[in-house]
Length: 354
Ligand code: NAD
Image (cartoon, helix red, strand yellow):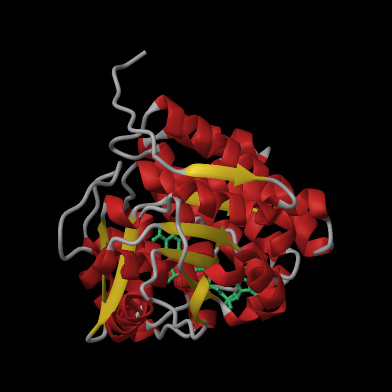
């Protein structure tokens, strides 16, 4: 066994069907009395349930959620929190609603209770992102990490199959890169492998039968594990590419992850055979990149970055942007390598040896 460093995340997790009902007790535990609710509009059907769970604690709500957290929205929501004297943020929704709560927490230091309704995993990380002037800056800050996460699989029953599949593949991407992270450790790798296994098992069943509660629980469990991996260790080329494609070319976040992942895995695999063997085992496939690609095909991943609206003439600039600053990746690369990975992803080719 090699030496390692493990820093567990100080998040309290309540998992299971009906976990939502624990909200009042969890707010009591934190000693909070005045809640600003940040909720995705798609959870409007839960509005009555939320209102009765929060009772007199609900002092304001923000339901206009914009992806990638514009700085003006962060400022406006932080000002609202101050005006109403909020002492807690309850975030109900996917990575976008939770992202807004994180940005507000960065400004105000208010605690967050997160109730995720997608599988993208943001609720388990101290990573925030704020968009300004056409660019998204991200950072890590302990103050934005949720104090408590309530994982209630029943809340994801209404998440449409396509969004379920894409956000689940986004979570798998966290785990895959976590397995070859520079600071990977045995614990996060166990989380990663188990997270991939749970999502690989659950996502096809959710797409076939969105009402399958056991499959929903598998997916949310996988999302939790993969989110914890993202929160615990650093990411590499895949996340950098997706950040570039989303931030500078406006590509949709989760779909971009789903399209790019098999190509980056094919490129990195020769440098990290043991880590990629774990991905293959978790997916029950012969090999990691083809296993991820096959899962994506089964789940209806769009046919390449071109289907997401990227123009071929953007590939050079995307490769240049993604190689502007140095960062860790298990296999060394240059702009030419990245251009080739992007080209394969643009075409939506089955992954080949990198
Ligand atoms: P999202 O929050 O943007 O939601 C996608 C769509 O699904 C929205 O229209 C939303 O209203 C809808 N939706 C959410 N839950 C639903 C439900 N249960 N039923 C029906 N519709 C529902 O999607 P996402 O993929 O979870 O989040 C993407 C954002 O999160 C990106 O900005 C990404 O950068 C960020 N993110 C951040 C981290 C992090 O650690 N900081 C991790 C993952 C993603």
